[in-house]
Length: 240
Image 1 (tube, rainbow, N blue to C red):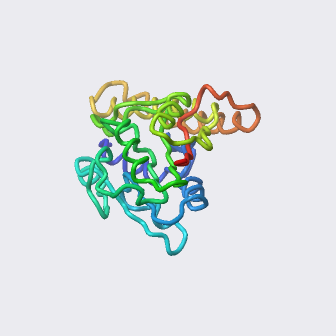
Image 2 (cartoon, rainbow, N blue to C red):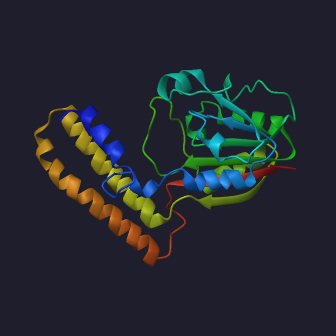
């Protein structure tokens, strides 16, 4: 079976424990979070297919922005604007809410981007940000950094924003299971790409992935989470 066929099958299985990313969950929780907090004129940096627009309150003034090199050629983005996040083509204090989801790791100049976000936010404007922490390199070569909870707080405060909430997006058990399943899936894919004899082990991996998923899911409900391990963070901040 070709690697492309494996990817197509995996997409169908995404919402089941058979998929390596099952523990990551879908966009529903993030969509509800953004819908509860976002208001007014909303700038979505790294908007991709504008999925968050469908979650927003009726009457929101939505602006989708993406980066040409990655948005158009890797994600098929449909923004209102193509621009670099470190040089936003918007006036000072012109936006009520900035949404930037799973984008910070892909920015060559993250500090400059945060400075621009602070510049375009109105007083008391909100920043809603999510970023992976323990997660494989993706969209290479456009994957440049991960930040701890302390690094995120430092960088947000450095541009004059106040962190209101900063929480793990996944518990430690779910995060550990997710990384294990992604490693198993990635190694299996590499075996097919290299036509390695280790392809013979893939049936065992197909059995192992749902077992790891279910054990991690159960552990996450029976044991307290350890804050030092998470797949990513979700942050809300305000411009004072």
